[in-house]
Length: 108
Figure 1: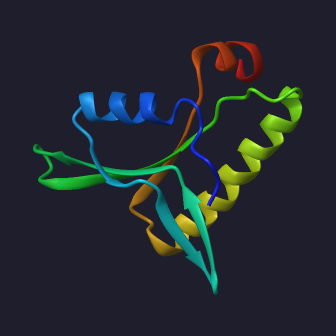
Figure 2 (figure 1 turned 180 degrees about the vertical axis):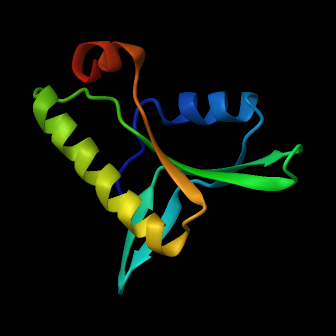
Figure 3 (figure 1 turned 90 degrees about the vertical axis):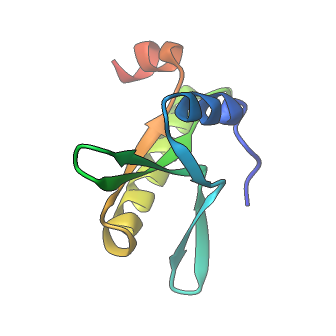
């Protein structure tokens, strides 16, 4: 299992403050005999619909020397996790958590 991202606890706290219950830290995904780990799994009860909303959150800081390498890694992980979740937990939505600075610099 990889080390936690530098923003891991910040994202976790923000989710909790928004009413999410952290159910997995990390969320283990199995593919065959292998395991992969998304940084966080969370649930939130939607009272109007009386059902749980489930998410998985991959946290990325983009602090390496190459933002392009960071982007390739983040997008690659996102796609792999999304594909596994589509099969194993189709009701769980995957999100990529990045800083506003990274969003404005790389993703916009």
